[in-house]
Length: 305
Image 1 (cartoon, rainbow, N blue to C red):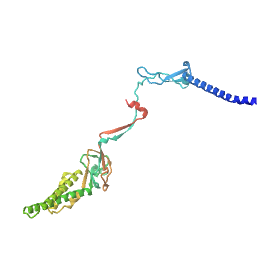
Image 2 (image 1 turned 180 degrees about the vertical axis):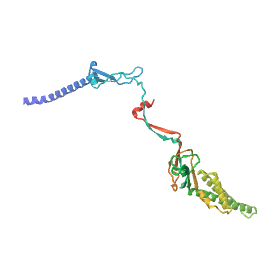
Image 3 (image 1 turned 30 degrees about the horizontal axis):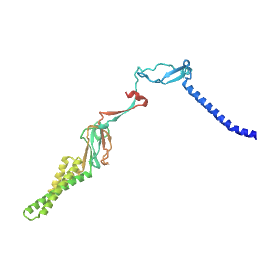
Image 4 (image 1 turned 90 degrees about the vertical axis):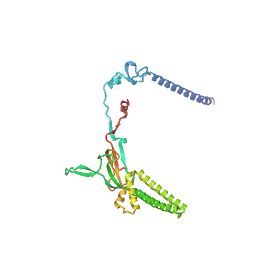
């Protein structure tokens, strides 16, 4: 009984002693590792130090160093020297590309949807016959401002011109009716209300004519074309014969070059149907180009200054 009780009491005490001993060993190892970091691996007589910090003016913080054993330096044929700025210029080769200056590039569009019925041509020397021949405008052809590029047939433009003719014809009839009613009113044969109603119809006709003219001007139709439409309406009011060829010309839209330059893109041919978002041509001034340089990341310090 006594022996068993004694062993039972000693077992917890032995466990505590083992844990305490292990903690002391761990603390000693940690302190040894810490003090080893504070001392160099090799003494100064058997090692070489390489300074990695750049040279700077004025006081500077202690520069970081790396310790290279002398034997390692000898095996790798390493030499220790003071870092200095380069004395010879280095040629920096960069890859790049030329591009059209976006400020000198024009997209040529049509203001109306329609069908291309003609593409402008230019005269060029023939390689086979030795004479000169005509061919459609194409890539890298030079053009001048106002030069015709293509002809578009637009049903929408023809309808807007017809609306102006209808408005002018109706206004002419309303004005004649108002004139007759006014003469009757002076003789007492027409009421005041009827006369006012005829006057309102004339005002409505004038507004319709103004609206049709403004629509054509907003579509950049020239004043000469608008004058031709008015002349056609005058013929209709006087019951004169209308020239059917001029009706076809109403739907004709001439696309012209907005600037001097070179055609760098052509997206149209005779018979194509286009809308207002289609780039028919792209014309650029190649006298001024943009340059895009592609530099590697390690070359940026040489470029930034």
